[in-house]
Figure (cartoon, rainbow over the protein chains, first blue to last red):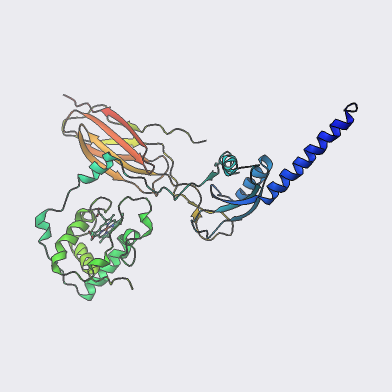
Length: 237
Length: 116
Ligand code: HEC
C-alpha cells in the first residue's frame, strides 16, 4: 500500500467518487414493491419474514397490510434500491423462508386456484348422470302453495339448500367454495308457472353434477314444498 | 417441504361369492386445507392464508364401468378413509381414481376374485 501511495489514493478516490455517484443514483431510484404473501398464518409470521428478508438482502420491509386488502391476501411492502436488488430476488428469498409454524411462505402469484378445470375423465363421469326423464317433466305440484307449505319449504331450504344456493337464492352460499358448477340462481323461478314444476322436482330429486339428489333424503311432499318455496323467491332488489 | 403424495391404498375381501355385497375400503393420504386462516391475533375474520388443497373427486370403476362418483369439498378430512359397498356381479378389477382441486390425479386398482 505504502509504496504506490499516490496512484493508490487516486484509485481510492475514484472508487469512492464512483461509489457515491452510484449510491446517489440508486438512492434516487429506491422503489417500494408490494408482495401478496401466502403463509402468514401466525402472529409471529410477519416478524419472521421481515427478519429473514432484511438479513439476506439489502431491503427494508416497510409494512404489512394483513387484513382488508383488495385481493384478500396479506400484502407486504418492501423498499429496496433499484439495480441492487430485483423483485425476483426478494420473491426468491420469500419462497425459501419458513414460517415459525413450519410452513413455507410464498409469493402469491394470481387469483387463488380454487378449482382448476375438471379433467376429461371427471367431465365424462359427471355426464353419466344424464337428463331428467321426460315423464318427470310433465308433473305438476300436488301440494298447494299455501302459507303452511311455503313455511315448511323455507325451513327445508334453510336446512339443506342455503349452503349452496344462498339465502336469497342467488347461488352464492358458503359451500360453493370447492365445487365446480355454480349453483343456479333459484330466484329466476320466482314467477314460474306450473310448467316448471316437473323440471324443478326432478332436478331436486335426482340432482345433477354438483347438485345432490335430494330424493334420497327428503320425502316427496317435502320436495314439493321446496318447489313451492323456490317459486315464491323474489328477485334481488 | 411438500411430500410427494402416494397413490391410494385399497382393501378388498380376499374372495367373494357371486352376487355377494362386499365392502371396499380406500385410504388416501392427501392433505386438506380450506385455504383460510388467521393472519393476525386480533383478527376476527378469516383471511386467505395458504393455498387451498383438497380432494375433489373419487371415481370408482368396476371393470370398465364407472359405478360410483364421490364429490368432495374443502370440508374433507386429511387422509380420509372411504368405505363403500359393491355387489360382486363379475370378476373384474376395482379401480379408484382420485383427482384433487389442482387437477392432479392418482389411481390404484385391485382384482376382485369370485369364489367358484
Ligand atoms: C352442494 C351444493 C348444493 C346444495 C346443497 C343444493 N344445490 Fe341445488 N344446485 C347445485 C348446483 C351446483 C346446481 C347446478 C347443477 C347443474 O346445472 O349442473 C343446482 C341446481 C339446482 C336447481 C336447478 C335450477 C336450474 O335453474 O336449473 C334446483 C331447482 C335446485 N338446485 C334446488 C335445490 C334445492 C331445493 C336444494 C335443497 C334441498 C338444493 N338445490 C341444494 C348445488 C346445490
